[in-house]
Image (cartoon, rainbow, N blue to C red):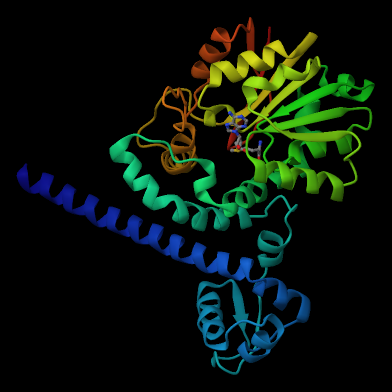
Amino acid sequence: MTTTTDQRAAEAAEALMGRIFGAALGAAELFTIYLGDVHGIYRAIDEGGPATAAELAERTGLDHRYLVEWLQSQAISGLLTIDGTDVWTDRFSLAPGVREALLEPTNPVYAGGLAAVVPAVGRAFPQLVEAFRTGAGVPYAAYGDEAVRAQEMLNRPAYVNSLAAEWIPNVPGLHDLLTRGARVADLGTGAGWSAIELAKAYPAVRVDGYDNDEDSISRARRNAAEQGVSGRVSFEVRDIADVAANGTPYDLVTFFECVHDFAHPVEALTAARTALAPGGSVIVMDEHADEVLAAPGDEVQRFLAAASTIWCTPQGLVDEDSDVVGAIMRPDRLRHLAQHAGFGQVDVLPIEHPFWRFYRLTP
Ligand SMILES: C[S@@+](CC[C@H](N)C(=O)[O-])C[C@H]1O[C@@H](n2cnc3c(N)ncnc32)[C@H](O)[C@@H]1O
């Protein structure tokens, strides 16, 4: 009996050690991917063609010795190919898939945002370690500019490829409403891509995007101008609780992946309800947390739970009386919040996504 128990514990420890090694490998590679992205090395190879370390140093202005080491790591990891075995003199090319996953920010498989999250967490990490003792929040700004950039890189591909093409057609009546023309408020808009893609798909729609993060709103304004929709999409730095302040009645209010981050989610949902025009409704896109805890969980739940611990929950704890939910926001929890915010009905929408669940809230 004891031997069997000891044996099981030894096997479990060995398996865990393997798993932790895999995680360390992934983390180390994410840092190298970030370096390739932020310094434009993948792009320099893509645009200028296969190159040696010396040629790339010339093209990018980066240090030759660091480039040799980075190129070697990328070839060993399989993100680059090398046309020989000498990392000092042979030429490197992009491996298949690297362009789509790391150089095309609107490609559905674009994954650059996942690499950008790592340095953002690194910047806030000393504060986060301390916060576990003090209970203090770690403001979004503590994660640095990279956090806002990472956030926009993470979600933009889905808004570009799925918002109008897949999601809206699955919400009864929404396509017709937006086609006729509607006033929309996009709350917690971040860099504004949900608002911008909505306006691009529906020319009769006007969208007001709100976020309390200044950097996000300046990026959102720049993005809207670049996409040619600034005339119909405006962005303002404003706390969600004040969304009804300008008196505009909205036919639709949207929350894209942010309710679980809010320090005061009931107040945010109440503000959204108050801002609705008669007949209006609220759409919430939030994390696809399991309906009940499954422990251990699958990879999606593991990712959400870990992200919640190092990103969402610390950011939502910024107010002393915070009631932040965190990324494991189960449907029952949202129903409860919505009920407290005065909504009469909460429907889970028939939109399938591995990471997100969609809800419609009706007063
Ligand atoms: C996870 S990000 C989502 C951003 C964007 N919707 C997207 O999908 O990329 C959450 C956003 O909520 C914003 N936020 C958090 N608390 C807020 C508040 N009280 N008022 C306004 N915005 C808030 C943050 O600044 C951040 O941009």
